[in-house]
Amino acid sequence: MRFAGKCAVITGAASGIGRATTLLFAREGATVFAADLNLEGATAVAAEGQNIVPVACDVCDVAQIKALMDRAASEFGGIDYVFNNAGAGGAREPIDEIDADGWDRTMDLLLRSVAMGTRYAVPHMLGRKGAAIVNTSSVAAVGPGYSPTAYAVAKAGVLHLTKCSATDLAKHGIRVNAVQPGFINTNIFTASMEMPAELVDQAKAMIAQMSSHAQPVARGGQPDDIANAVAFLCSEAAGFMTGASLIVDGGITVGPRHSWDPEAPGMFDALTAMAEAAGVSMGVKI
Image (cartoon, rainbow, N blue to C red):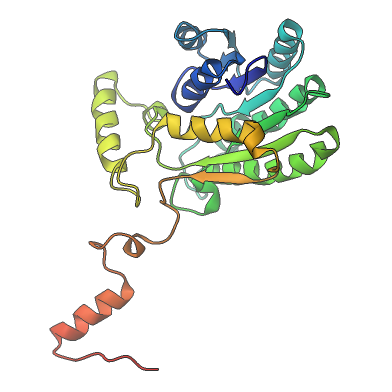
């Protein structure tokens, strides 16, 4: 019961990482304001736990973000934790094809919403011992190849926003950290694509199978893996952490595939094989 008597606001709470984190915080004693564009989904999550308040919120609408924070503070008396998590895949076009509207929508959803969620939560977090904010970034923030360009840029922005916010809010005793999920089995992949409903379950099964082979930890990442990291960052156990980010990715970013997969030859292996095929012995030059 790490969060008994505390209030948490979680966005994107109807599914995936947000749902898992909402249920975990509720089990740990918090009153959770579970916000999502999908109110029906948030209401279903609330039915799974105790002290969960479903709230309709479009995080692309700043007025709705402010209303969410004001409501949580009004009903509970203040806010202790905020998890700025809501998001989707965003625009999928490469930089030479994307239009300004697609770019702006992606930034509004993934970056501006985090800034405004922090902005309008802070007045209600002042004086709350142990107050903490966690933002959802991504392994896509560390480099290309993990997501579409706009998504990656927005998530890199979330990392820098986290550091800047940590410095801005240190004077208030509010810690700000981020979590960087890797390949997590959620609906973000299918939801961001115009996929017929009859193919969604098939696609999810394929993603689950692929993700178990995508990184050194030989299983697909689960929403609970991220929820546990968020809970740690909000807890007293992380009381000396701010402006930091936890990469929770099963090791997908540790290095190129050949560094951990014995079935994937690296450059040296390829050169050795080429030499052997040519009947040449390769020694080691010191």
